[in-house]
Image (cartoon, rainbow, N blue to C red; front, side):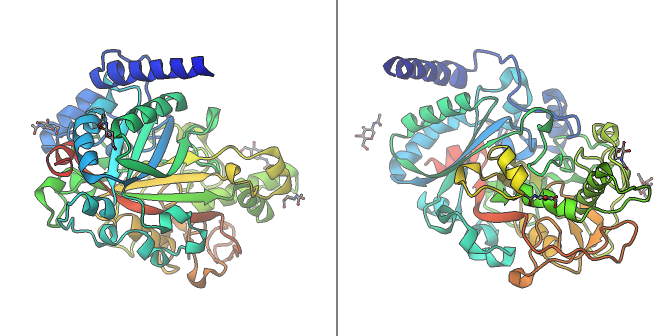
Length: 486
Ligand SMILES: *[C@@H]1O[C@H](CO)[C@@H](O)[C@H](O)[C@H]1NC(C)=O
Ligand SMILES: *[C@@H]1O[C@H](CO)[C@@H](O)[C@H](O)[C@H]1NC(C)=O
Ligand SMILES: *[C@@H]1O[C@H](CO)[C@@H](O)[C@H](O)[C@H]1NC(C)=O
Ligand SMILES: *[C@@H]1O[C@H](CO)[C@@H](O)[C@H](O)[C@H]1NC(C)=O
Ligand SMILES: *[C@@H]1O[C@H](CO)[C@@H](O)[C@H](O)[C@H]1NC(C)=O
């Protein structure tokens, strides 16, 4: 026991002092995953030249914002500030040097062992004496007060998200949980009790060939937009002005305090997924394909087809618009083709409602017992889902818009905000995955059956349950240094 502690301590000192702050040791492998279906990150060089053209300072922008869903493991540590004066001084002296910028994250040779980002709730900014209005009412009132307009039942919320204790969140990402834990203990030592932990969620990419897929099995993060000044769009990929994601940049028309420039609002949600129940629903409502027989494999295929129609993409990530009746993993793995189709959305006019999805799955794989019973375990340690993260410069036109107006509004064509953030042209009515009908009654999405577009499938239960969350502001490195830490 003693020896283990000593060697852990030694390891943490070595890593904290030598690797993290001085970056002496180039890494051998990236701390990020890179599933072929997701748009690849730009090289550091390409990003630098795009940023120079657009006047973006990628060294000032926290790394998580533009990177998307590419972490092996990520810890979300929600904290309360206990001693403002001490915390401010540690924030500037100890935490800021650990904060990983976009520039650092892009190249394996400059990546730290564990990437660190930090973001603050309105309560946290207020505690720090930062009272400027950031120009976002969802952020300033907090997620709990808007829970009902998101369609949430707060009885399902994790109590810590309903409380008043969450001032901020630390995001620690690496390729191993050991690295994350080492960094966490370094930070705990550095902050010396000036903040306390309120809650934590440990996320991890799913194992093996499921890497990059969420717990229902669908490839995630494919349809993140390309941000002007950062990455070059792939065929069919939406392009957004930097100000749609970053405050104070071109495309952001809201008045902000100058120090808020290059920050972004982080909408966090803990979305529990009821995987065995979802799989049973798909089997029980399996669509009948034109060529089908009554064989077991045909039912399996019909259930896959229903899932694809609900999500707008097959599990591989191939869009149903391009391959309506069978999955096409080769197409899915080709970023030159897997977004190359036209969404038509006559209802909506200008499309500015973009977010960068940057979440990660949490919780273990489904157990055999759960699969056999078709029921999620009640054991809390087996809860699984998505630690959902969306970045945007306006929560009202980003995450909250997507949730309220597309997912919950039966009159709009729906977007599957849950996994792929696509329009799902096939489906009308509440979003079959995360939509919550008013009064929490059954949902009746139509248009899921390609053979019979008028057929309505009734969904009597929620496959995704919101366990709550919070809105945060992820400040620029210069804002941490010059505004928050002083
Ligand atoms: C970019 O941001 C970094 C970090 O805040 C800062 O040190 C640097 O001076 C900035 N560069 C420019 C050109 O503003
Ligand atoms: C840690 O905090 C305690 C009191 O909370 C204080 O006495 C001590 O000086 C602090 N240590 C450091 C290294 O700042
Ligand atoms: C099920 O789908 C697979 C893969 O697309 C296909 O090879 C197989 O023939 C299908 N089975 C039936 C019964 O349709
Ligand atoms: C999308 O629409 C544009 C404009 O109508 C057209 O030029 C383009 O070929 C379409 N792309 C696809 C993949 O259908
Ligand atoms: C699980 O669901 C499937 C599909 O409806 C069904 O065939 C099977 O009998 C169910 N198992 C149990 C234990 O209810």
